[in-house]
Length: 119
Image (spheres, one colour):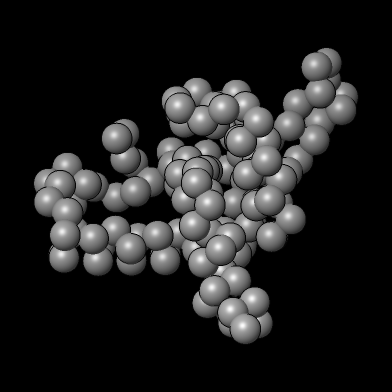
């Protein structure tokens, strides 16, 4: 039964559409916290419903942290990578290295760090 396999369970979660781009956006620009509107603006084709859903899932999995500031109106929510999310960035970078080595030719990507990527 695959449901007991750690690799299958992890792949099921991280392979959901938009999960990796959201984590990368939270990693970029060396900004500790980012607002929902910032993420929505950077992830052009994502729907608000999917972005909200993925943020909730990432928070539930302990990969991101949500901070709510109820002192302001409207209430301000910001997101940041949790320690496990920061650690997962290393895995994303390893995926990038593998792809560049074996099947994707992309000089711009090859010569830049994911934290400064503008693609």
